[in-house]
Image (cartoon, rainbow, N blue to C red; front, side, top):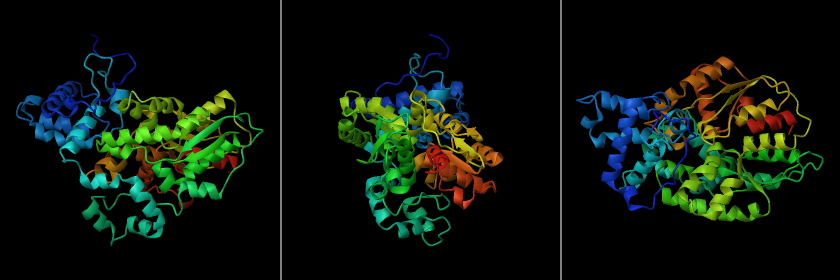
Length: 446
């Protein structure tokens, strides 16, 4: 056995249907095995708050070793993990195929699944994950919803913090006045038959964020692809289950994986690629679902057919070339490479996409923004998340670009809030552009 590993990391299917997965004693033994290895290594100390919490817990114990730490004190470490996968992919030398077989994020997922089974999960955060229940209602009453969730609302935000556990200072995404599919139907586009890529077909999975909060990202994806000859259809069967994954609700995620993959099977059979504009959702379809439902043929076929939106445009540019007509974008762009983009192991596709735009002045930042989905807006986590994202905010403020974008729209919103704290707020007119694909749409004049 070598010390560390030079081999590419591999992941095992998640054995969430096995009884041992939820056995308290076996889980505790595995937590202690892994924590002891982490304690002896400490290479990932600066990625999130899980590791500093673990190391402080051990260092402040009676013996300075894990043997004198009570298992009941593990919960803050488990809760602090944002499932970003960066320790697994970029830092840990002991991931499979190394004999130590260490997968910290999926171990934290297992611990959360046990918390859920024992009804010890965060019930306030769990209510926030019901995207397909909250989203349609919030769109219907978007004026009231956006007023109530707006920072600085002294009437509602303290109440939200008290009742729902949402930090009153956390910026929350607004809800659209119409869903993505409604807006798409009202504004159809024509496919450019003269483009080099004419003949390709793609179904765009809107994701809950694109359907309810930011349809403009999905519509920009459709516009750019249509400009480049790709026939598209926007679909949204339901949320991919990333919010439920964060809570350890693997049965719910598995149900969604089966339902959505089956609903998209006919598109794949007709030769359509699947394009996902939100990095976290692309990660679910490409990597997490096949580990949760490894024997499902529809899940496997969907995984193989799925592209992140930036990945798809770059692939289009390399395979057929893009349509002419892009102009330079004034003011420069800072592009954040999000954790869930990196977890897809596809390279810096946002950077490659921006490089396709003439005379592009792009600053690239590759570090965690500290948001972590639902985790980052909760009262107990918000300031920790802002601290984790501090280096990103600093570099973005230093760049001073007109636009700040990310393949993860929530990470991008976290960065703009961090810029406010750095006394470098963005202009109101540029805040609407969250995603690199929107910069390309702007360059095309779409």
